[in-house]
Each structure stands twice: as C-alpha cells, then as structure tokens.
Image 1 (cartoon, rainbow, N blue to C red):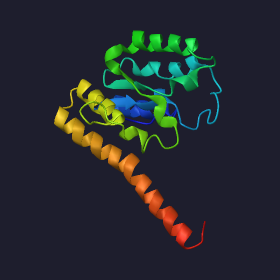
Image 2: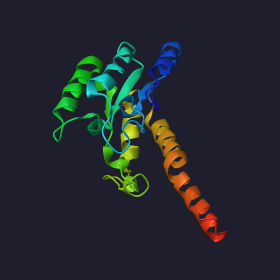
Image 3: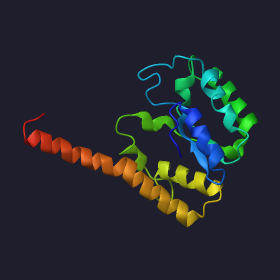
Image 4: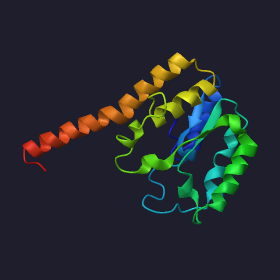
Length: 174
C-alpha cells in the first residue's frame, strides 16, 4: 500500500520499473492535507483522472477511501458515484479495494479500529489482509505483514505519543 499524496509522476516511475511489485494506491491517491477541514479544490473527476494512467498496469490497484471528500454534493454524493463507476469500468472490481472512512475521526484509528469482526480480527486489519490475499499473497504472510504494519503505524505511535506527552507534562513543558 502506498500513500501517493498526489505525487503520481514519481509513483509511476516505480510502477513501470518494478512490474512484479503490487502497488495499492491508498486514499484514491489523495493527500490527507488536500482540502483539510473542508472540500477539495478541484472536482472529483480531476483527482480520478490522475489515477487513470495506472489502469494499464496490472500490478496497480486503488483503495477507494476518502471518497466523500471528493464530492461537491451532499449525500448520496452522486458526483462521486459517477467517478466510482468510472473506476470500476477502467480498473475492474478486482483492482479496487473498499476503504472505510470512519478512521478520519480523531481516536477511531486507535480505539474504533480495534472493533472486532466476527472471528476477532479488527476491521482495518481484515480489509488489509483480504486485499493482500486478493492479489495472491499467501494468507499467513498477509496476516503477519498486516499486523506488523498496523503495529508500527497505528498502535505504537499512539503509545509513544502518550509517553512523550506525559514526559512533557512532568517537566512542565506543556
């Protein structure tokens, strides 16, 4: 999974060079800072157009998340629905992954992301594991990779941040 953040030209270099590596473009290729606190500057088609050059490459998939941010309309976001259908037509359902947007809330990545599905696997981890296995990664490797990734990017930083905050408070720096 790669966070392109709008840097498609740079990413495309790697996609062409490493055609045996699976690239999953996260968040529809958006930067989290794009439209922070509000709507994006460009219409949805602008951001989806940036993903179209990846279509000929079978080693590239797109995680469809942050989609409501693409919309200039209210629910049910018809302008974004049109773009989703365009992505399905271009990439096929095999190369699109659904990403839930509930993680954009402040504490949900740490607390809400732990909400287990039946079987005890948290929601985010289950989606990563299913995405990796969809592209042929053996399930045991997908599980280990996903849990290590999530531990390093979501759970440990929260613990380190809490420790840093406590230390700063203890030394009257906050």
